[in-house]
Image (cartoon, rainbow, N blue to C red; front, side):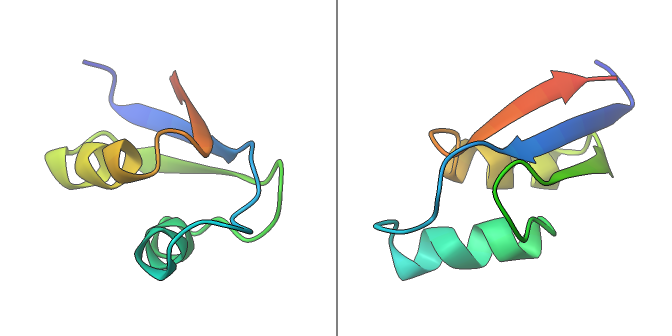
Length: 60
């Protein structure tokens, strides 16, 4: 596995459930096309899995 993940918000959270919005916020994503780099941990992978339809993930 890669050591870092680049997570980008590619779809809007409008229409997403409140739980999904909180997950996106917890990942540090604020606006559309905003990207963050996070460590590749099981916790990060789990959060990304919850909002996989809203984000794109790149392994660095």
